[in-house]
Image 1 (cartoon, one colour):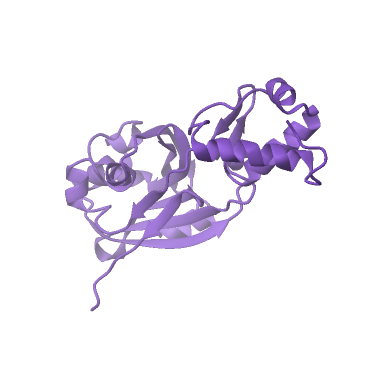
Image 2 (cartoon, rainbow, N blue to C red):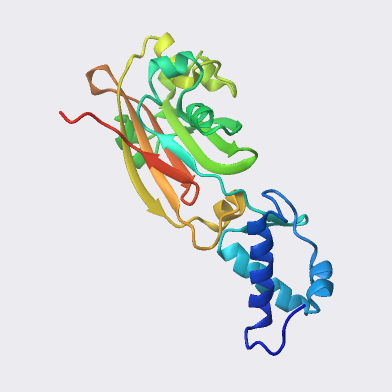
Length: 253
């Protein structure tokens, strides 16, 4: 019960007690917290007070609220995004490229939802791909999950001249992914470049990724280069800034 004589606001006392129970494992990652009604009875507090306590825990990233379902303890796992060799041909041959490689190294289960569509390149896309504005591009829009939790959104765009008649225009691109299909079609990948920044999530992104209020997104744009500096793909990625660590290594030339 709340100590009315302590001088500490009731909602902070409730938040502190729930925080301690989460830390001690009484509520494990993925567990649902008791309902508002149960918490009001447990702490002999009003619903607004209980809601304020939950807001504190959400802001700290300890819990997430799912509309119509309840409040759940947020898994604490970190994901290391290992730059070295993650896009290599050897990794693709083992079906451990990119996100699947991160999953193998980090010991989590990766899953991805994919939507494929076609659109005309706008000015930004045309500039990055080195094509004319209005050129048709293939778009692969992906929602990527670690142990069921959405941690990354990725949208790839490729000139459709490169993808027509290949599995890149299918939801399932097969072992090795889109890069393997590009090279099978004769488009050798020579280099990659990544541009990294941050931005605040939109309300829709924050809801989908169950982000605490204080967390920003890592924004990465990757460009895949072919021979003679041709542009094969751009991939715009948004990563949960609390969960991802970007790890880069390079030789001391």
